[in-house]
Image (cartoon, rainbow, N blue to C red; front, side, top):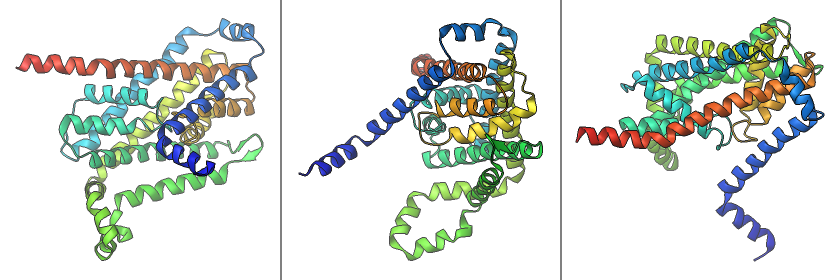
Length: 337
């Protein structure tokens, strides 16, 4: 067998492992590059941390508590439209575990697969429908990011490093709204009629019927979608506060409006499937944007690393929940017997 075919066969067998390993290397490489490129030595790191405001840093970290709760509440609101009732504590735990898995799966939305599975395991709700609910949830979050980016444009933040970002942001927002519209109106493309005519599509449609019907059902819950959109906007604002408070803790003088511009762009960039959970890509893009707005390299890098450390702490909490939840569930079952 020729060498190229052997390599191709090897890759196909171990595709997931190779891709995950590659993204892990990219993530670690980007973080290491960030540290060594932005700090002269460890004394510079110590100097940057010397006058940090602990209270503001703690307040920055606490915004994650609201973020986890509102994400669970938003998720619960969408699930109720499908007659699925789960408590906020359970969904909050699932959100935390999802954040834990985000560090091992490509892109910053990889943990949603676990969240969908968790609801299916808990309630018997079809996995395909569970994923569909999370698609609606995610799209509302993406649109919220886009809306804040549009607000930033009106506030005068239109360039990064001298290059205009007006067109890319407008394109992103338009695509997001179009996707949201198509998800809520899956019949507009005539897929159901087309599936009846083509055998292959008919079989595929039968497998995805739950997805189709779940998307279609949300048309009856317009007020719920409005509330979910509001929750997503408040969640995005909490992320903006998270970044702003961390920056203020380091003495960075950028005002809140600057982060209305920075955070949505960083969030969008972090969705690119380059690294694990957006690690490295998110931090690097944050530094680039903050430096372009006049922040010292060392302080911008330290801010990004502190925010990354917060995500690591949250992920560890999710890992603990993931490890202990089966034990707790077994004990609860034993009590009922």
